[in-house]
Length: 133
Length: 64
Image 1 (cartoon, rainbow over the protein chains, first blue to last red):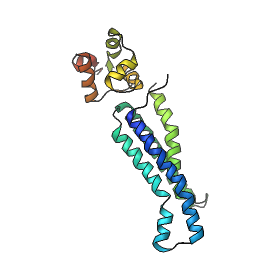
Image 2: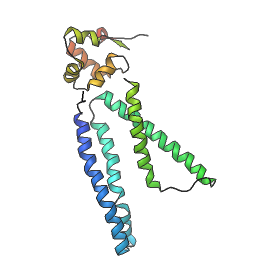
Image 3: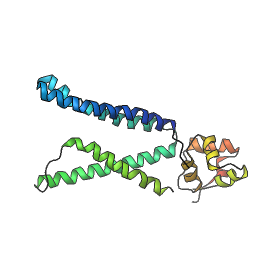
Image 4: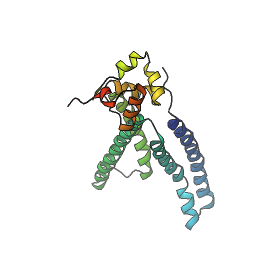
């Protein structure tokens, strides 16, 4: 049976989707502006930071969901999955950082932190839910 | 923590979904409560008690 979505989850998706679409739209624009106009100074800062802003918005949207979710059990499971994701991301970054220090691995772009966090969150969610089955 | 949610629900012939609607939570939340895998907060426990017209301690039993 299909599970009814909570109003907070519906609002989360309504906010998350345009934020991700904005990211998909802004990223190529930033790259094109950089390649064609070779901006410098403040303009370069603006062009460079632009793709990060929708991602920052997504992080805030996740926080707003937790604040708005009135089903305490659902919120509890989301918090647990987010904590797992946070632990995995921080542990992974720490291990990677020391491996990098000793020249064992290369330096990945730091903007990968959020996709890694989301991947870990995606894996943690069904595992957390399974514990309550 | 043990509770009598399943019995109280059965007495009224409500499904888990019916109880979920009345408490404004998801069906999974009712399932986790009934199986004792999740203990409700005080506000939700009071809401449950009000719905069944019984004091909290007659619905939830501390196993300690």
